[in-house]
Image 1 (spheres, rainbow, N blue to C red):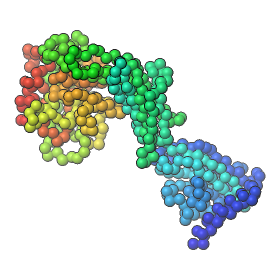
Image 2 (image 1 turned 90 degrees about the vertical axis):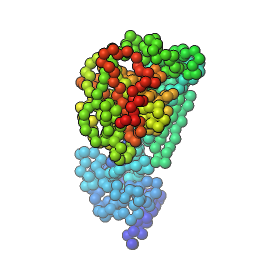
Image 3 (image 1 turned 45 degrees about the horizontal axis):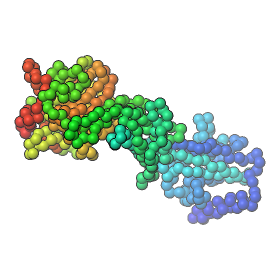
Image 4 (image 1 turned 120 degrees about the vertical axis):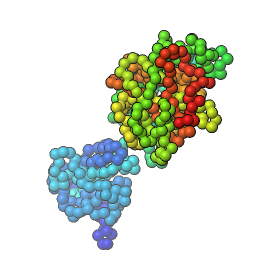
Length: 500
């Protein structure tokens, strides 16, 4: 108990010597440090501090403290650590470390402090204080704790006078990051607004927006000092005239170039159209669904489902849904996913998928995935996250946004839709590196993904979880195909959806 009571007195005595004008003995004891030190949250780092000239510090008093000298972060005296007054948040996380790979430690005067599991609260100044019979000295090391946030999420909203409101947001940063806008020529742009906020854990979020013309390309990058930026880019195209009498305000077409830590992740090309088509049988309207000159009847394929005996699925004649006995909790996962056959290694291919019924007792599907994959075996686990980066390109329902669909990109890209598709058209242009999705009933292009396909690419489906409505891969007669995209009043899925 007496030793514990003497600890604050030692600090006071040391400070008293300083206030009385005493100084360390020249040439005998000098404390040197290297500052600042940067560490990512949750990682281990060393705050370098050593004596000059080199000498053993095994018998010295060494204290590391922050603003309050009587609550040390680490205190060493008489060849042992004394923890009675140690600041509670550092218990079990600090010890002597090595200032560099060549250091032999305390016996050569290296009194560096190693800090484990760095937290946001650890950021700040640390005093390295060394005292001996020959004198004393101190120096300050600044610790910067960093956290790289999420890749920027861009959204574009069409406004009047051929202008588009483009916003950029990112969260989970520390310290507060820099957010910069630039145009296609990498020239800086001035935003209309730039704000930041801090959450309960101390992490920072940033949000900014600007107005640009409807035929511009802008980039938003978010970064910390001395770190590679995370960037997102949006390319806007002129809005065409909408149909006479249509209530739609127009459409915006844009591409997102997603870059995280300066590494190209991929390209997303997204078009969204407003207005309604007049007739499903109108050849001119039909051509709007696909690149100019392409007819559906030329590329329609009857996709079959693989026979995998997936215990989580109920499959019957091209219709599928999750097994009613499937009790797994949580979000939709690969446990209910399945490939189609055959695989494609070239060419252009089109197929359609029914996502529900107009029958009010059944309704539309609330959860689903539809697209393609390059994997030969789908992981049978609920923890695997399929994305474009690991061979899964698909469009899906959005569990968090009822009026949106989303692509399997990282980060997620949400597509606002006026109405969710009852029948989804999928067009794979293997050689052109593009996968497009269409709302068949509304005759709208929902969106397209760009990718460099290699090897065999297989149709990919997931009927989701806990849906009354089934998913059906629609089949067409091998001979005498009409080339139409289908009539919603005569969809075979609507007649048989309740039979699966």
